[in-house]
Image 1 (cartoon, rainbow, N blue to C red):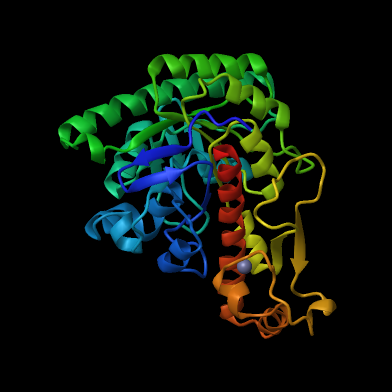
Image 2: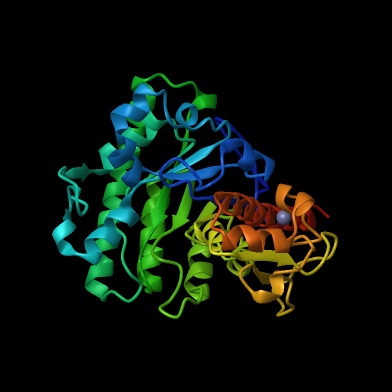
Length: 369
Ligand SMILES: [Zn+2]
């Protein structure tokens, strides 16, 4: 593996790369608190503008002093622009909103309010929330959408990114934010399954100039397989010294694969969702054994709900130092799962998150050797 960079300096601290960031969509990683996250070695979290502007609402977040204060979280926060969520909502049902060159208008099911998200508004909100990394609003597509849709998406994504940068620079100047407190601005590369469009999008965004980039669009195909070729190609379009975020990538095997392609940042709800459903991750080797994607099985699943967990007095993983593995057995977790106690969700989430930080720590260490 060959990392072009091993750290990223942000207003709320330095990230060691590669880094896995859990999704704290609504300002919380479900069932764990900020201290739990710190103790798992989580360096930063991803929060979501689309959801937060609805609940608790932007004026409430600002009144509470921003996301860090509201959530009691001291480390960096990356805020997603909301483009992907608005796209998902509208794609699911056109009744929920529409998108044009100006921006996105949406009205979630059951909401009496209509929300407008323009590139400028998205940047204004993310800055007022106190984000460490601001992501430009983009026009998301599905990889299977026809070419004209992908062409329009690239054109709009570049246009919106230009407007985002303009607004970002204007606000940094207006608020007189000192350099060390200035967030970074990332743009998202769209283009679906077309190499030509991915290249056009990357080239045009590079001319505008950003601190980092994200791989745009859902990263998996209809069978749930990683879109390896396109993800690798898109990374090659960006100079290696610029950090790149594999948005939505979080399956351990996919994180490893993307790290080998020189991606630096990952976020996904999968490890925490799997934990709540009783699917725990465990390494098959100790930390000194290198992890490779050569086909060797370097991690395994533990299904807490299985009958063979009933009297298993071993911890979930003998290679894990988390609160759960240091104190509790699989059998106890099985019992907590069966009686539906919220302690199960906390312990399981802590374990899977520690697995993810151990994974990125192991990958970082090999690079240092
Ligand atoms: Zn553990």
